[in-house]
Image (cartoon, rainbow, N blue to C red):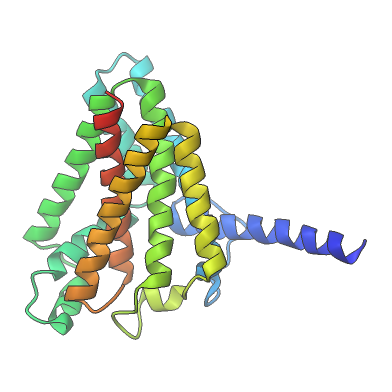
Amino acid sequence: MRDDDREQEHGRSGILADLAVAIAFLSRLPAALASHAPGRLARASRAFPAAGLLIGALGAIAYVVAWGLELYPLPAALVAVAVLVWLTRALHEDGLADFTDGLAGATPEHRLQIMRDVHVGSFGVLALILALAFRVVTLAEIADPGAVARVLIAGAALSRAAVVVLMARLPLARPDGLAREAGRPSGDEVTVAVGIGLAATFLLLPWLPALLCTLFAAAGSFAVAWLARQRLGGVTGDVLGASQQAAEIGFLLAAAVSLT
């Protein structure tokens, strides 16, 4: 085998391994090739949006099946969101709740301490209720199963690309924890992740809704990033989860406005 053929083969296997790590980390789906060596997650982050495509597709299937069983849009949307939460082990929702609770602290150190508490406070509970409500209601507003399926898939991909951007751009808020263990993605890995997220959005949606969804998702992620920088001094694993939720909610709000 020639050297360039070996490099291409290694690249393909590397991408597949990264996808397996991303799927194993972001969901409860089995991924036999996954390895969580230090820094491995940073490299695998380029495949986060690709893993999101799979997660979103399974949520879309749940909605289509519920629609086929003649459920109304609201319960069908509830089924789809419940499947997504189950598939991801509520990973991002947990981050959103902890991050929201932490914002109430008096100092950055106190806020980080609150975020590590295993108990969920009032702000976290309210954030979860509102986040789930926004996701369910926006999907029910879109209603059409084909449109909902495309939105779920694209939104799941683009919102996870936003996570990679924050991993690369924000300083760390603490010297340990998930964000530290994951490592920092390179510029190339961020480019690949954002490219996959944008490609999914603009291939699956008409260009104007796709543009609005991208802007709203970016705004949601930026809002979390700004709060994290101001209130915590940087990023944590909980911040990353909150950014995914904010980006996805922004995406769904724009989709509900532009596709109905």
